Image (cartoon, rainbow over all chains, first blue to last red; front, side, top):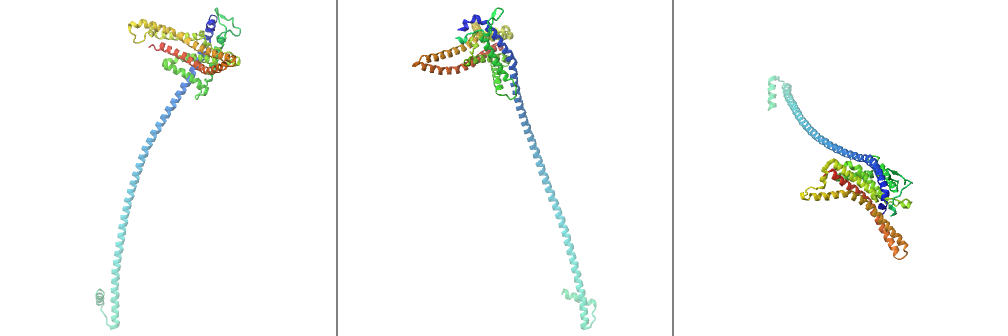
Length: 163
Length: 252
């Protein structure tokens, strides 16, 4: 077994070289490079965690914004409904008023026209009496040669017309 | 057993420092190869991109593995041991796996320096020293209460103290020897089985080829097992070191 057979002549060399080379490994690799690699890893982990947190925050904000938008939208809709119903009521009210006004105007017109018709009819009747009296007077004068009194003629006509 | 022998390279047999003979050996060469391999692996993961590529992903999964192991075993205080445990784990892992590579096909002779207790012992004593230093630094002489578990009846304390002390002092040996034995056993097993294959072929017709084929199939399975062992032993070394550090860091 060379490990034991050669121990006397090689132990110093073995100890010297392994201390030297392991020391190099420890200081260059262990102290020099490993912390940097670990830093890189922890930096990445932190960045991932930060990104996740930012994403969660953004989602929360979006939710809140949507919520507020929804309440605003609901309020707007209610307000619009109110305006529409108000406008509807006002429109129907004004329509009713206009209708009433038109009705009354029409009634007045109709009444006026009826009155005019009545006077016209009365006028016409009077004229007929007058004409009939004159005609009767004329006829009587021609046939009988009698001069009839105007008033008597009229009374006779009236009697004949109204029977 | 030739694969375990250490020999000086590049004519550095004469190197001496303060009377100690420290030639640059094949063992030292493979330590450097493992270190350079680890360095190349790490450099590939140093792009520091936000979206990692495959290589960076591999490096980050290794550091993350060691980081989470320390976080699980020691807690938040374990963060400062990540460089040491990572170096230990990856250095042993690269050494174990590189020692298994079939580089002999290309004329190279891989050498697994983790199959030498003179190398694993240094790593084990280093881990144990850190445990002692941290323990006595943080808890001063209270660190000795590690050897008296909670709820020990008063008359039992001297006995328990001695048992716990011995088990504590055995730690560096078990730590270093476990890795050395596992690596050496695997390599010896492969060597023995490959010896069977060659002897079986040389034995001519009859039972020889049967032995060869069976040994060869077994060898393939054991090769897979050895790759697993290479990773597991590196993991065990790092895990036990972190458990011992937990004792020192969080005394009871």
